[in-house]
Image 1: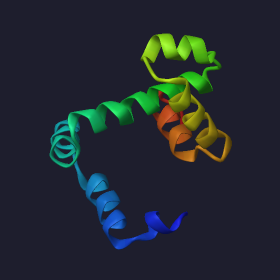
Image 2: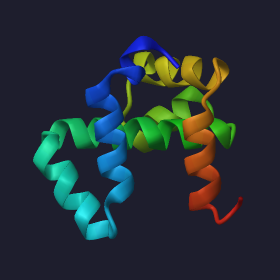
Image 3: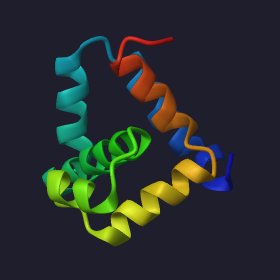
Image 4: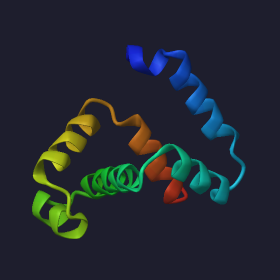
Length: 97
Protein backbone atom coordinates (compact mmCIF):
# COMPACT_ATOMS: atom_id res chain seq x y z
CA UNK A 1 0.00 0.00 0.00
CA UNK A 2 1.47 3.36 -0.90
CA UNK A 3 1.86 6.24 1.54
CA UNK A 4 -1.24 8.16 0.34
CA UNK A 5 -3.49 5.17 1.00
CA UNK A 6 -2.17 4.97 4.56
CA UNK A 7 -3.03 8.56 5.48
CA UNK A 8 -5.71 9.05 8.12
CA UNK A 9 -8.07 11.01 5.82
CA UNK A 10 -7.92 8.27 3.19
CA UNK A 11 -8.52 5.57 5.80
CA UNK A 12 -11.54 7.56 7.04
CA UNK A 13 -12.85 7.88 3.47
CA UNK A 14 -12.59 4.13 2.99
CA UNK A 15 -14.35 3.49 6.31
CA UNK A 16 -17.12 5.95 5.44
CA UNK A 17 -17.77 4.20 2.13
CA UNK A 18 -17.82 0.79 3.81
CA UNK A 19 -20.39 2.01 6.33
CA UNK A 20 -22.89 3.16 3.73
CA UNK A 21 -25.85 0.81 3.65
CA UNK A 22 -27.52 1.23 0.28
CA UNK A 23 -26.91 2.06 -3.34
CA UNK A 24 -28.75 5.35 -2.77
CA UNK A 25 -26.46 6.29 0.13
CA UNK A 26 -23.38 5.57 -2.00
CA UNK A 27 -24.82 7.59 -4.88
CA UNK A 28 -25.59 10.51 -2.56
CA UNK A 29 -22.12 10.34 -1.01
CA UNK A 30 -20.37 10.25 -4.38
CA UNK A 31 -22.42 13.26 -5.54
CA UNK A 32 -21.37 15.11 -2.37
CA UNK A 33 -17.64 14.40 -2.54
CA UNK A 34 -17.03 14.25 -6.30
CA UNK A 35 -17.85 16.36 -9.28
CA UNK A 36 -19.95 14.78 -12.03
CA UNK A 37 -16.78 14.66 -14.15
CA UNK A 38 -14.87 12.81 -11.43
CA UNK A 39 -17.63 10.24 -11.05
CA UNK A 40 -17.76 9.74 -14.82
CA UNK A 41 -13.96 9.37 -14.93
CA UNK A 42 -14.00 6.72 -12.20
CA UNK A 43 -16.81 4.85 -13.95
CA UNK A 44 -14.97 5.00 -17.28
CA UNK A 45 -11.76 3.63 -15.73
CA UNK A 46 -13.70 0.78 -14.17
CA UNK A 47 -15.37 0.01 -17.50
CA UNK A 48 -11.99 0.07 -19.27
CA UNK A 49 -10.50 -2.31 -16.69
CA UNK A 50 -13.36 -4.76 -17.08
CA UNK A 51 -13.12 -4.65 -20.88
CA UNK A 52 -9.35 -5.16 -20.74
CA UNK A 53 -9.93 -8.14 -18.45
CA UNK A 54 -12.34 -9.47 -21.05
CA UNK A 55 -9.53 -9.16 -23.64
CA UNK A 56 -11.01 -6.43 -25.82
CA UNK A 57 -8.57 -4.46 -27.97
CA UNK A 58 -7.71 -0.81 -27.36
CA UNK A 59 -9.74 0.14 -30.43
CA UNK A 60 -12.79 -1.77 -29.20
CA UNK A 61 -12.48 -0.23 -25.74
CA UNK A 62 -12.02 3.26 -27.17
CA UNK A 63 -15.13 2.78 -29.32
CA UNK A 64 -17.27 1.41 -26.44
CA UNK A 65 -16.15 3.86 -23.73
CA UNK A 66 -14.77 6.96 -25.42
CA UNK A 67 -11.63 6.55 -23.29
CA UNK A 68 -8.38 7.80 -24.75
CA UNK A 69 -5.58 5.37 -25.46
CA UNK A 70 -3.64 7.11 -22.67
CA UNK A 71 -6.40 6.25 -20.19
CA UNK A 72 -6.59 2.69 -21.47
CA UNK A 73 -2.81 2.35 -21.12
CA UNK A 74 -2.90 3.78 -17.59
CA UNK A 75 -5.59 1.31 -16.54
CA UNK A 76 -3.76 -1.57 -18.22
CA UNK A 77 -0.59 -0.65 -16.34
CA UNK A 78 -2.57 -0.73 -13.09
CA UNK A 79 -3.91 -4.18 -13.96
CA UNK A 80 -0.42 -5.45 -14.78
CA UNK A 81 0.94 -4.08 -11.50
CA UNK A 82 -1.70 -5.88 -9.46
CA UNK A 83 -5.17 -4.58 -10.13
CA UNK A 84 -6.59 -6.34 -7.09
CA UNK A 85 -9.31 -3.76 -6.63
CA UNK A 86 -10.50 -4.00 -10.21
CA UNK A 87 -10.36 -7.79 -10.00
CA UNK A 88 -12.43 -7.96 -6.80
CA UNK A 89 -15.05 -5.55 -8.14
CA UNK A 90 -15.26 -7.35 -11.48
CA UNK A 91 -15.77 -10.73 -9.82
CA UNK A 92 -18.42 -9.43 -7.43
CA UNK A 93 -20.35 -7.66 -10.18
CA UNK A 94 -20.34 -10.93 -12.13
CA UNK A 95 -21.55 -12.83 -9.07
CA UNK A 96 -18.26 -14.62 -8.52
CA UNK A 97 -16.42 -14.90 -5.21
